[in-house]
Length: 114
Length: 285
Image 1 (cartoon, each protein chain N blue to C red):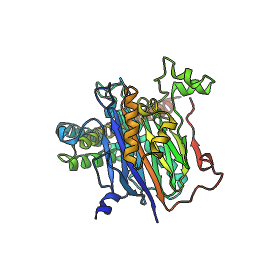
Image 2 (image 1 turned 45 degrees about the vertical axis):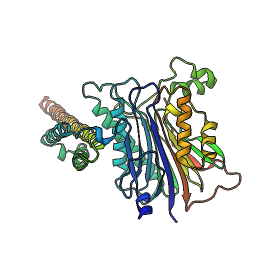
Image 3 (image 1 turned 30 degrees about the horizontal axis):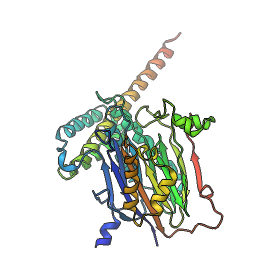
Image 4 (image 1 turned 180 degrees about the vertical axis):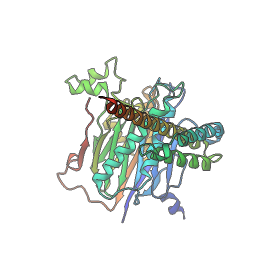
């Protein structure tokens, strides 16, 4: 049993603090959830460039939620990562939409020429 | 018999800094279970998904360096936890993609107020099967100790290294007023050029990954001796960190030491480290 435990190890350390001294990132988690909601509302989940980042944000949020109370340091990091992924998804979706609009406008201008 | 790693890691705030902006990860990506005692020596069996060893050094003086370093190691671990291809060349690409994705996440997070200039170095060693895939952004280092010979297997992406490459002596280069400048860091631009290497492992190899809080204070021969004369890896890690602190300990100090054993070829007579190390992708300014 001991060898089993020793051979299946994951060790992740954010070196600044131990889990017990860090509060659960409830507010950050809610903010990340809101960012993810905005990304989904912007159509990121159906955008090929942004879809993966939406998925990663969802996974990070779920992992952070599971860790809250047990490992608040890592839960905080995962929540920050989820926010970054969600915001990145929003940016990519917005960029894609802007590119589409620009293409349409260019096509219309071409079509309108005598 | 599979490949096994005996790993010990240690991080220390040093004697001057008020916080530790270094982060590291030692992750068995096959099992995913956790241990929270970094100074304990652990024995890991390298499974199908591999083992990740990585050090990130949040940039001193920049806002939220500790956030950047923690984000990078977490993102890297997450990306590499997904499916891993069998072909080592494809694993190189996967490691590069994971590092670039981690960079993008930190870059995005750096848009938050107060974190505009946050960044971090990254040196990651991903061990899978008989290979170690090494990725580097910045100036954290990886070394290999094999058959009593130690060699740096990363190349610092730093101003000092640039001076040395142009013919300035290492002694003079380190005295430059710009001796703490890194040429690129994770999170400071939307994309990075990841330096990549692949090492064919041999029986009794020893891998060392560290932040510059160690490598700036402890010479390569001293690292070698710390390992060779220590009976245990935790004692070797402690000796290295203590030596860096005796010499001022101005920076945060982090080191991971991993001894390799199991189903691997032995080093053959006359075989150098370079014979088994392939530069997959260089960083060029």
